[in-house]
Length: 382
Image 1 (cartoon, rainbow, N blue to C red):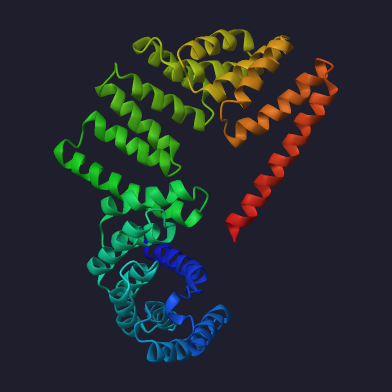
Image 2: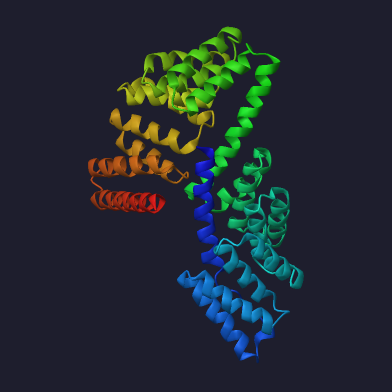
């Protein structure tokens, strides 16, 4: 499964790389040499058409007529790499790097060629050189992560993949690779922890987190109860237990867990927020609103806390105050879920407050948000 996913990521990233780098820059050396410039343009055109063999012929001719032109060797290396000629590509790209060590893309593609030849150490070194030249090159960062994962070094892969994800936060391939790297790191840590003390509360907590992440909340709950039996005054364990209970809709048990968390950590904003949210969602806003007000004072995450406080206030008829809190939530960098819920609730509240234009604006924003979400889902599925 890991190898298959890695291969899929490899194919997609390679396609993107060729798309981005298919047009080599035409440097000053080609000015006045119309024949070399024409060969470079013809090679680039062939690459755009997907004809690697034709591109290779044009770029080869360009290297013969301009043997000091690094861009010609870069183009030739790309064509050879696209044609599956890894060794030939390595030689051409090595020449490009020697002629111009700062040529954008040359180190990156040289690293890819070496990776295809199963030389992960050398490939990683070339990718790092590319990143020195272009620290925000997402493709280079991603490829370094792929190479380090393939070499069995998830700790070395995590850094560049974190950077790539920060630069392109909605790329599913990068997110998968990043998650894979961190999962492997966590797995190594858990195995080491298990060897040290297989029945410690930390091991049970780690197992619970693993079960939770893999969609097995019942097993997570069982491990958390074992952890709590060994560490009964640890508020973090009760928080994890409450979260697990919420996933299986055991809200009474979740409330008990969060109440225990508050017992050992009286001003814990997360526990107060969860207690208040559950009460509001279950139809007891009179109990939930005071808890959410305490959560606000305890500096719980602003957007969701403000939203549920507003929702609770709306359920007890305090519409003006409710609208103000939900408006405040919308200004606090909310998640898409909170945004969608917020626009919907504001449209209802504005109607009750006879603010018809504001209600319509909220509905319009809700429609725009749903359209963006649908577009993003379609793009991610490509």
